Image (cartoon, rainbow, N blue to C red; front, side, top):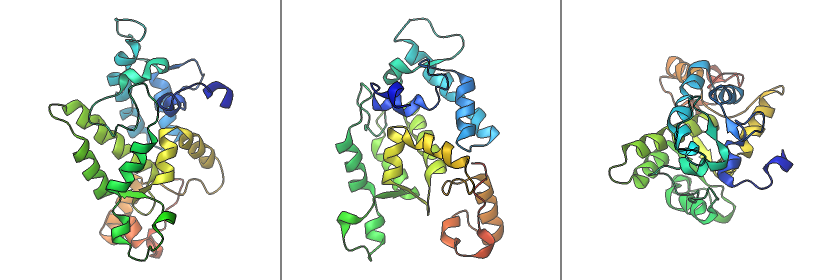
Length: 234
C-alpha cells in the first residue's frame, strides 16, 4: 500500500480504502463492500451508496462537465467533493491541517472537565463524546447550507458508530480516520480472533435498551448481561 499512496493527499488517503483495484476510481459496489468490510450491516452499507449519488459529480468535474452515468468517484479530484459546514481539517486541496485538528479537541473536548482525576493534561488523550459532537456540528454550520449540515451530520454519525469506545471518539483514532489508516487496521482486526474492540451496532442499541433501559451501553459495561460480542454488525 505504501508505494501506491506515497504521493496522495490526506483526503485521497482517507478514501483509498474503498479503491479496491487501485485504479483511482471508486464504484458504488466498492463503497458497499468497503462498509461491509468495516463491519457495517447490509442496510447501512446500502445507505452508503448515497455517497456516490452526491459526490460522484463533483469529482467528475475534474475530468468532464458531463456526469458519470455509473456514479463513480474519481479520487484524483476528491477535493472537489469537499462540502461546507465541515470541520475545516482538510484544506481546499485535500491536505491535512493538523493545527485545526488539535484545536478541535482543545475547544470541544469536555472530558477534562468531567474527569477531575486527570492531573497531567499533557498526558491526557483527547476525546469527543456525543454531546461534544453535537456542539462541534452546531459550531461549524454556516448559513444557507442545508446540504453541508446534512453531510457533516452523516459523517460524524458514521464516525461515532465506527470508532466509539466508552461512548467517545478518541483523538488517535480520529487522526487515523483523517489519513485513512484506521480503515485498513479495522479490516485486519476483523479477520483475527477476537475481532474489533470498538464501535456501536444495532445489537448494542437493542441489547442496551432491553437489558438496562439505556442505549448508552458503556455506562453499564461492567454488568454481565451487557457483554458485547465484537463480531456484531454496525
